[in-house]
Image 1: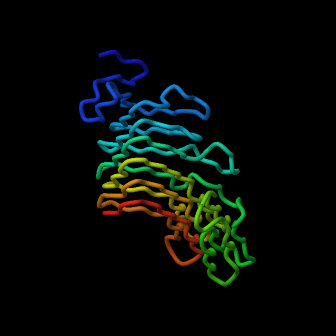
Image 2: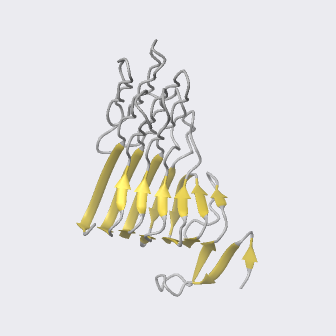
Amino acid sequence: MKTQNSIAIIAAIALPTTAAFATVFTSNTTIAIGNATYDGQPIVVSNCTLTVNGPHSFASLQVISNSIVTHAAAPNGEAGNLLSLTIAGDLMLDNLSRIDASGRGYGANAGPGVSVHTPSGYASGAGHGGIGGSPNGGGLGGGGYDSVPTPNAWGSGGGDGSFAGGGAGGGIVRLVVVGTLQVDGVIVADGVTVGWTGGGGAGGSIQINAGKLAGGGSISAQGGSTDITGGGGGGGGRIALYFTTNTF
């Protein structure tokens, strides 16, 4: 077996017969925007984190053995920092693994649904799919925005309170899976939960188009809460699911 940068090229016994070999990532790796080295290949992610920025197309994708697929954070709305994958075959996510863009959206005090720091020192929650929660002492949360049928925006960041910072919003996950999307783990783009006076981050965006949606896992874009009464919780994100067959 040849290895280079801990990326192994092995026989794809469990993959479609049209693909003789798969690229297997076994250590933390980043695929940058515009890097087409792995496009068109069957991909296996095993016991590591694969960060993929911008649009990429793979023949198939297996995320197994406590692995994570994510994108780089976009605290200021960096355009290419999102996960946008087109899978020509199947995408399989085992029950120990996740596609996770939690906290990868706008940073504290940023985004279209940014929350408000009130005179009381408590910040409200950020908004996105829903408005942010009011903090102790009252005050408006951040407002809602983005498309319902085609969500494509990062969650906004919660406001800084007097004694705690705001939480980052959730990121963006876009998946087009021609075959079966098997979700036994989690697909998540939650906002960050914060402490005391800070405002929670809003949930991000998840848009899935699959031939078949299956599995017993979960899909989530929740707003971040606060650990005690003080700042407001973040508003929920947006999730849009499109499929021909559903057994999820």
